[in-house]
Length: 238
Image (tube, rainbow, N blue to C red; front, side, top):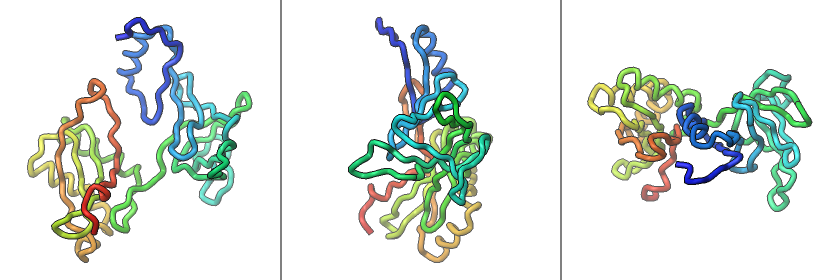
């Protein structure tokens, strides 16, 4: 409900906006402009996309943004690389050529602003000494949902097993009917990382387990569920 509100601008960031949600917003606020902003935890907001095409105009007033390859060289327009940021206003703790953990496509410049698109996390999840790329975690939910359509998300959880007195990997399935077959399929997801199995066999990690949770009843059925969660701080100290 709009309750008499007549906003001129609606902004969102930190997650993609579902088409159904965008439709609801436009239906309730037909005169408002819908825009996505690009937030980061350490360097603040870096840009905004107004046209719904996923192209972000960066804030050159507050940041110097570069897109660099693995060797630290600028990529040509149309190529992907790591987003590297220098923040002009950070005096107490300067942020200078800081990799924010994202990758993006460099689209050149327009109107004095560097353009980015295709922004995605480049960070990796950690289980023991194994690094699991986020691009792998993104495939988990669709793979399980192909067998059980009620699966809405899958998380890799780094936790601590008090009974085993060691770190433990957990595959958390959000939604799903449970059962032995889906549990086995969830455990198979970890088989693609033999180093995890090796650390379980050596006793460095506790045996992995699968848990099922109901979807959260928030935002009328739309929410952001992270691919990876480190819950060791919620468990007793080793």
